Amino acid sequence: MKIATVEGFHLAAPLRRPEGNALGFRSTREALLLRLTTDSGVSGWGEAGPAPHGTSAYLNQVIAPALIGRDAQAIGPIWHDLMKRRGYDRQGVAVMAISAVDVALHDLVAQARGLSVAEMLGGALRTTHFAYASGPYLVQGEDPYAGFLDEIQGFID
Image (cartoon, rainbow, N blue to C red):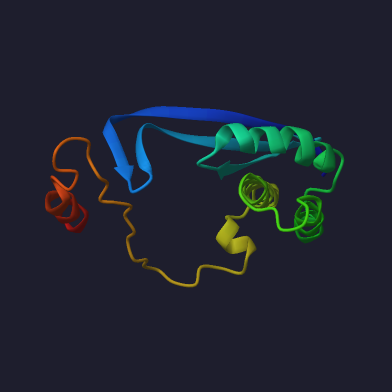
């Protein structure tokens, strides 16, 4: 089961209202979806964000040439090879791209075996999970903290 194609899809969705933090505001949420497809037609998906343009460039220029023709089931060796290729002390988009590849490979191999990723990794560790929510975010205007309590309460409800 050899990797035949590496495709990135840049997604952008406008937010209902701009949101921000101490670094600034954004009005669009972006991500890069990655699809790896094998010569047998099995595909796996991964995601990288929040820098889809740089991550896409790294995927196309560095990672894709290193993946084509590789055995998709060699997840560990592929991960180690990609980490070595990122260069000394390089983080950011390189690690985001490698993470997307790692997730896509696990998805691909699990699907090829007719399993969920959890089953492939030995089974679920728990039956319940704590919820996680990002926020609250700053809002533009005179009071950047307006609505914080309502947003937090919405997470709880």
